Amino acid sequence: MTMPDLKLISINSGSSSVKFSVFGFSGIKKNVILSNIDRVLLCKIEEIGTEYGYFYLKDKNKIESKKQNFVNHEKALHYILQKTNLLKDDKNGKIDIVVHRYVHGGKYYLQPLIVSDDDIKKLAKLNDIAPLHNPSNLKGLKVMKSLLPGAKQICIFDTAFHGGIPLHAKLYPLPIEYAEKFNIEKYGFHGISYSFVAGLLKIYDKKIKKAVICHLGNGASICAVKNGKSIDTSMGYTPLEGLMMGTRCGNIDPEVPFILKKKLNLTDDAIKEILNKKSGLLGISKKTYDFKELIKQKDKYSKLALKMYAYRIVKFIGQYAAALNGIDALVFTGGIGENSDRLRKEVCVGLAYLGVKIDDGKNTAAAKYFQTHDPFGRLDVENSVIPISGDAALSASAVKVFAVHTDEELQMAFESINLQK
Ligand code: ADP
Image (tube, helix red, strand yellow):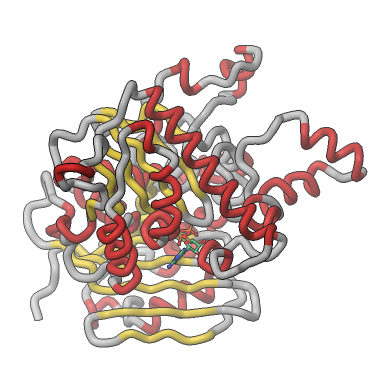
């Protein structure tokens, strides 16, 4: 078997989960295109540190999934590397690059970073501005650096895609010295996903200049994209701002946390816990944060949670359609955005005033397609961007609507290969 010129691991190390993909690339490392990169292995570990651990692995020959508990990230990552023989350089070829998803890059990291020892100390300082995300990204980085000391470690930042948001959209209307002294401003997140989707849209249809992209997963945000660049986004200084999410409240009256603190006699940490972990779909439904489970429920709170969720998305899309002065395309991505035809339909019905018309048959078929396809091998652009808007003579949509399967790990591999000389 011929070995690829470059072998990469992309890692998304979350607080209790790790998504891990291995890619191979052969050829000239300049102006690489997404569809020239081969995914040779896909692995997910969920519920790290709990008794509900779950392991999934897919490679060319097999799919394996089982319940398995891991006490921490180190044990989980060591297990994957050992199981896939990636710790042994001779058997599967040396890993050249490990690329890490890094959620918050602050003001400083607007480009991919080839990590030095000094950078690890600098990255640790960013833990404070994204305490729910950055510490687990850093943990993944440190573990992989010690397990594969010969590989180049690269970080790609979710905030980087939003670095060009203009000041009038970026600033909060607080006394301006807080922005100037403490960098309190909108950073935005899900940038790796938005870069991937915006890149695919450009390949798919060059005429699309103004798009609203909705990344709807456990965390959810919306981005206004003009000529491939973010001009505004719903998450802010932290990933708590914006849409209602699985467990996060998104936008609320900023006075409310102070009122709750007083009424319930709570600490700041307890308030943060409520806003980040007990609100959103979970808080309203009182049942679950998980969209797929929630749509099976029939009680009034679950129905209300779903209605609020869609309503808030419709409102944000309206804001961004206004900010862009009209849109050519609307895109749904992320676990909910890709898989829930029901949510897409409900949102699009609320956007009839923009001339959005959805084709029910295409919408349902797109959800079925994504539910049965794992991203493997090479990216097939035609099957990753699925048009779901009406195009028949009498029901043509004024805005092109798409469901797109996002692939943050592939985007990270792509950006890393393009960094190589
Ligand atoms: P994360 O933000 O953790 O990466 P994902 O992008 O994987 O999250 O999205 C997870 C969300 O997608 C969950 O709420 C899950 O229930 C939802 N989801 C997954 N599959 C489906 C489906 N078939 N129908 C509706 N929702 C789904």
